[in-house]
Image (cartoon, rainbow, N blue to C red; front, side, top):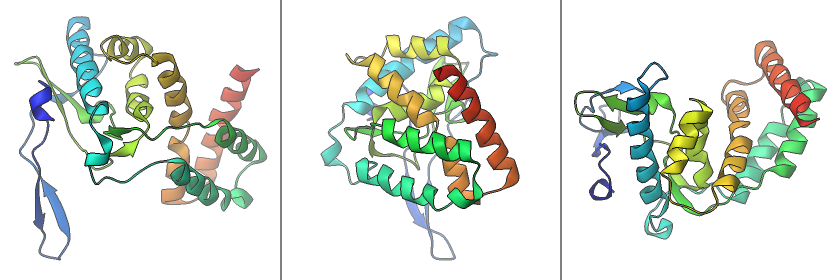
Length: 214
């Protein structure tokens, strides 16, 4: 993949820790996480490099890689795990969850980074070069997942990246990215369990979403 992009990517080495676990090591990649505090010119360069990188990444032959899959079965299993928490969730959250998983139509066609957010996109000002780190969530799934974190930076930045992303169905990808973005709080629920704080945040966000739907 490195030969197909000018973005700096980690070169992994797998080693065994003293306690017997596997660890993934790679050389330090310089740069700072991207942010809206960067100049417009720098953000435009980042967007251009990201768009080209994602084009190449998503065109890799998925069958050639032994990666986890996030297909329909994955999301069905996720839904069942979430349902086990229904007794502890407000009615508005349950209603939103049911509608979300009816509408959710992910595809499983591409090799994806899986967690492409600002903290994992580095900008090295001295070389005007982007580096990408943390491929621990890499899988075969919906290419839209790689635009979720990008969309949270800003809509303008998302559009700049998409302008350099060479696919025909950009509108569909944006729609699926919007759906997949709504799963973030559910992953937090599964990792930490229900809490009054999390339930209140879910209710606040989902009530706001429902207002926009009307």
